[in-house]
Each structure stands twice: as structure tokens, then as C-alpha cells.
Length: 356
Image (cartoon, rainbow, N blue to C red; front, side, top):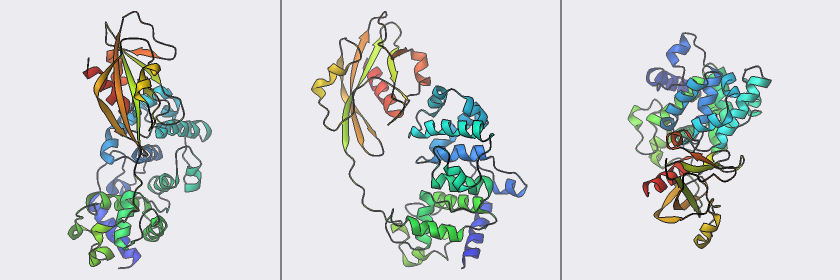
């Protein structure tokens, strides 16, 4: 099966089995002349970076309801954007999302660039995202390679070189397969194939439109691909989170993380630095206020990309008239769900409140 017929076979399958996703223009709609909205494609692709479709759907719908156009997002308050993003993780994406919206709205007249090069000049858009937007939103020929595509193409061509060293070969294969007439649909078709048929474990090869062409199916290696270089063990860092609760209304003392760095700009409960050699005996010297702090039994665990985190939780109840320290504030109970708290801080808050 040559490249043209291989691509056609997958597009025929996609026309019948394309997933229905809130940001996607279906193959049927595209045949009727419906053109994808670049803003919607960009928003979904930024959200989907290092995150699953299932996790993104509700966030995407919420964002689009709050800010239906790039100009709306550009004019939004940064704190509101961070609040809407809270829980989705990788918070530098949210900061770059706002910066990118501002650049497109205020400097480019609300129009996204169509080329990969132009798109990569914008904040938060790297090679993969630029290729995806260029292909899906503007129907430009681009090799779009995400995790699903890596798995499908490594199996189709039996690329046994471990990732990440296999990436150039996979990208070259995707570039050769991508047709010039429907590159956006083809990219989404390979992603759908990986998500529904060519899954990491027990791929449904009998249902695959590339069953005959797939080299690793013939050799019996499909489930062993893609191969990956051994991962380095993640270090474990430790620290303390302080849950200060105001007596009469259960308001909780909160602050904001520095604008740059891990969880930059997000809301937090006060705490210590996180370090692999953190000395718990010094914890109370970092408390945000004086009080009768008591250590909660158990720890809160959370995993980031490069390290595991273990937090001890200290809880203290304070008198109603206690003023918040500088740059901190009291978050009342009904406001706490709307705070821009990342997942690790929500875990710490829930652990502290459950112990009172």
C-alpha cells in the first residue's frame, strides 16, 4: 500500500468514525464548507498540551463561554483567567495563553498567523502546537506529531529506536503520509486512531484501517512499540503548608505565588520552600502568623513533571479580629472554590479543613 492509498484509507475511516469533540469541525461540516475557528483550535491545542481530552472538555467549554473571541480573552483580568484554569495544571500555559491572546488581539488585529513559523513567534506555541494549528485551522500541509501519532507511526513503520531518539524518524514519516488536500483532517484522524484503535495496550488491530499496511502487526511487535528510553527516577521534595482558619466564618489565609516559576501567579495557602532536605523541625519558623499551630496526621502527596512532593499540614484557628499579614488575604468559605488554587493547594486545603 503506497502513501497515497494509506492516507486515503485512514481518511475514509475518519469520515465514518471521527470523534465528536467540542472544538472540532467534523468531516461532514468541512465538506459543507464550515471553516474551523483558529481561536477555538488554538485554545484547545494549548489546553491539550500534556493533558487528556477528558480533562480538557469542561475547561474548554467554560473558557469559550466566558471569552468567546480572542479579543475577549485578551481583555480579561489575568486573575480571572488563572481562576478558570485552576486544576488543569502546567500553569505556565495559562500565563502564556493570556500573553498570546493579547498579542494576537492588540498587535495582529485579532488574526492568528497561518504558517508554522508565524505561529511559533507567539507566546506558548512550540513546534507541535504550531503544526497542529496551521494544519487544522488553516489546512496547511504540516506534520503534526503528538503522543498518539508517535505510537501509531512507530507501529505502522516498525520504528524500534527508543523515544525520544525516534522523534525525527516519526516526524519524517508523518510528513510523507500527510496529504496536501486534507492535512488537518488527516492529523486528527491519526490522533483518533491512536486514541480509539491503536491504543497503548491491546490495540484493536482487526478494526484498524491500516491493518494490512502495519509492519509491526505483521511481525507481532505492535504492543512493544513505541519503545522508550528508561526514565530517570524522580526526586522527592518535602515542605509544609499552613492552613490558618478564622474562627467565626472559617475563612482561610491565602496568598499568591511569584509570577514566574512553578505554579507562577496562582493562589496558594502559605507554606515553606520545597526541598529534598527540608528540616521539619524548622517548620514553625516559617508560619505566616503566630498561633497555636498543630500538625495534622498524615501527609499530602502530589507529583509534578520532575519531582514528587510530600507536604506536612499545620493547622491553626485564629481570632475573628486577626488581620492578615501583608500580601495575604482572608478567603471566605464561599469564595474558596473560586480561588485560582492549583490541585496541590486544593489537596492541602482539604486536608487542613478536614482535620478541624
